[in-house]
Every structure is written in structure tokens, then in C-alpha cells.
Image (cartoon, rainbow, N blue to C red; front, side):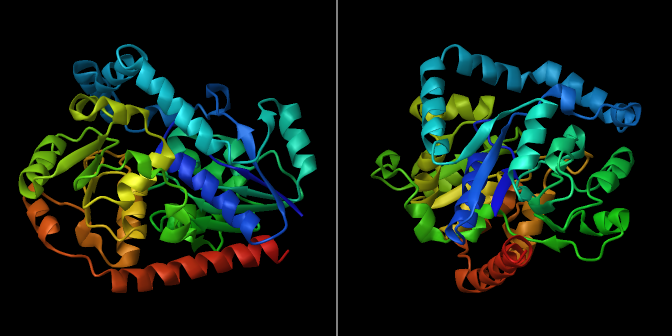
Length: 384
């Protein structure tokens, strides 16, 4: 049997790279199967465009565009990376390349002919993990639309947002009609998807990074970047207005070094510029050895749990944002029984700094979640 996996892997995001490698490593380590990651980079031409899609929440979109024009955070951040901090950014690319070199890829795939060749070359196809099914960027290739008459399985695929827009439902129903098994990363859209597909066997499974324990991940790290003194990690993907105050509260309370992993204009301004260059291996070791982790990142949360760290999570998007991506963290924390680690207001951060997490209970729940996810893979991938 030969397995092909399609997922995101190319945007210099720690979590994206880590989940891609984790699923391939797990599949390889539990069989003699040849497993390859489909070397596909999404393009605008493959993303669904429709009037309904463009008009949904149009008032919010216009308001958001105005805010972006005023604040311009992403543009400023990208300009700094390509200009003033180009050398650090090039080193970051190199570190990602080194990490991604451990993954076995197919030849580059872009045309219909390329996809047909891939469809003919493998027996089983898996889509996932990450937000490959996000309705805002609906790309049928991530639903394995190019595969016919063979095993199609979703593992930890995510819609990213907390609901399925009406415009996406007919496409999702069509694309998933011939899947052998569907495993979602979050429970948020499970009921909706069951209704759309008229299936009652859809599962919720863990992110691929959670299939492995801390011993596995520790070997993947790069400890050369770990400070000798005590430190906490700050890592934010969003630009919530409460982030600066949260960072100050943690800094003032712990009075230790703040290792900032930059992904926004604000964090780029306050970080040691060497941190720009860090890749997935550096990310792993910095989380593993931190005293505390302050984040809005799903995968930073996962690795905080894997390594048994104290942490708290800020919401990446406000509740008024119809495309908010908070549900993945809410679902994960709920599964582990630690929903309280999600900050509701900045004043509660002091409580997170003082309170320990009962990792005995957390790991009991994580082990149960991990084992059920492994059984999903065994049942649907290896027991063909």
C-alpha cells in the first residue's frame, strides 16, 4: 500500500510544518508503507469564487478592510521582513528548509495532469491536518476531488472557523460524498457536517503533533537557542489590542526574560531580532524549556501541553468576528478539561501565573484522546 497525504506545509508557520511532519512520521513508524506528502501549493485559480461567498458578511469585511488600511500591521510586518530584517528572514527560510527536508514529497503538482498522475500512483489518500477546509479558501484539491475509486480519508482536517457558511455546504457535501472516513480536528462543526453529509460516523481526532509524546518532540528540537537564564515565551499570530497589556503583566510578575517569537508588527518591534530566524526546531526547544507560555496559537498551546508547561491563551479574534478562529483552541482545551486557560479578561492573567495545571488529570484525558485517534488511523488506514 502507498499513501499520499495532502495538507498545508509552505507558509513558514511553525504549526503548519510540525503537523505535516508529524502525520507522515506517524504513518511511516506504524507500517512499512510508502508515505509521501503531495507537493502542492494552493493558488487563487483553485479557490472557489462565488457571489454568495463574496457577499457573506460583506459589512464586516468592508469594516475589516478599513481597519487594515488604518493600522496596516501585516503590510508593515512583511515590509520589515523583506527589507530591514531580510538577513534574519532568509535564515528563517533556511531553518524551515532543514526541518522540511525530513519530509518525503512527491514531485511538484499543479496541473490536472499532475493530479491524475498522483491519483494513479497511490492506493490511499489522506487530507489533513490544519485548516485545509477553511470555507474562506475553499480549494477542492484539499478535499481530494482529483481521486476516484480509491480510499479517501480525512485526518484532523479543520474548517478553522466555528460554522459552515451556506455557500460552502453544497460543495462540501459533494466533495465528501465518497470518503471512507472523516476525522475532524475540532468538534465545532461536527454536527453541521453530519447533517450536510448525512453521516453519523464522523469522528473528532487529535492534531498529528499530539500523536507523539514529549520524548519524540524533544529529539526534534534545537537547544542551542535556549537562554541560560529563566524565560517565558510570547508568541502571537493575531494583533489583539489586549496583547501588549498581557505581555506587560506577565513580564512585571515573573521578572524574567521574555523570548518573543515574532509574527506581527508589535511582536517584531519588541523581540530580539535573532528570533526572526527561528524555525520549527527552535520553536520546540523554546517551548520545552520555558517557565511560561503566553500565546494565541493553537500549536503553541499543543506544545505547551505536550511539555507540561504553565500557559495561558488569548483569543486571536473577537467574538464579533464571524470568521474568528478561536474554536480550535476552545475545542482542544475543553477536551482536556482546562478551558479556564483561555483568558476571558486581562485581569485573570495573574491567576494563570499563580495556579499550577494538574497535568496528571490532563494527561489522562490526552492519552484517551490520543489512543482513540490512533485507533481511527488503524481502523481506516491500515485495516483496509
